[in-house]
Image (cartoon, rainbow, N blue to C red; front, side, top):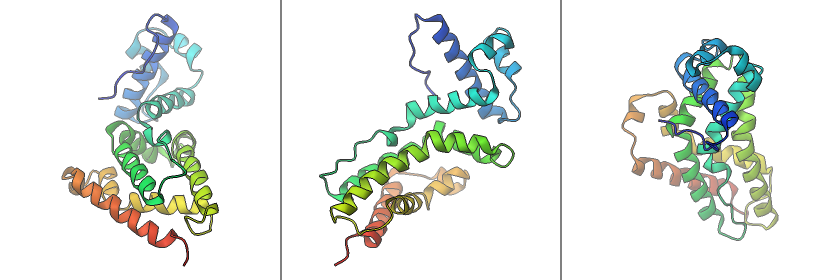
Length: 212
C-alpha cells in the first residue's frame, strides 16, 4: 500500500491535486500507461476532465507527478548521506543497503515494472523516470566517487563508470528475480539480500581499490 502524499489538508487546491495524483498512480499500476485515460482518472476522483486538465494539461505531466510523488516517499537512496571522510567500503555498504531496500519496495518496484513494460511504445516515460530518480542518485554518488579518487582512496578512473559497476553488481541477483516475480524472489529474505550486498561491495572494491 502506498501512503498518501504529505499535503496541507486545509488547502483545497492541494488536496484536489493530491486526489488526482493518487488516482492516477493506482490507474497506471492497474491498467498501464496506454490503458489509462484522463477521463477515467477524473471519474475516479469525481469531477470533469476539464478540472483535471487545469492541474495537469496532459497525461504525461500527470505521470511525471506520480513519479515525483513516489520518489519523494521512497527515494531514500537519493538523500542518504555520503560522508567524504569515512571509509569507502563502509559508506558504500550503507548506501547499497538503502538502495536495494528502496528498489525492492513495492511502490518503486511497481513503477519500474510499469516503465519497462511501456518503454518501447512510450520511451519518454522511461526518460522521465530515469531523470527524476536513477540519474539523480547516480550523479550524487559519482561526485563522491570522484572525490575519493582524488584523495587516492579509489583508483583513478571515470567516477560514473564506477557508479555503473556498483549499481550493476548490487542488482545482479535477487533484484532481477524480484523484477520478474520469479520464485526466487518470493523466497526473498534479508539475510540473502545482505549476503548479495556484501559480495557486490567486495567485488567492487577488488576492482576499484587504489593501485599498490
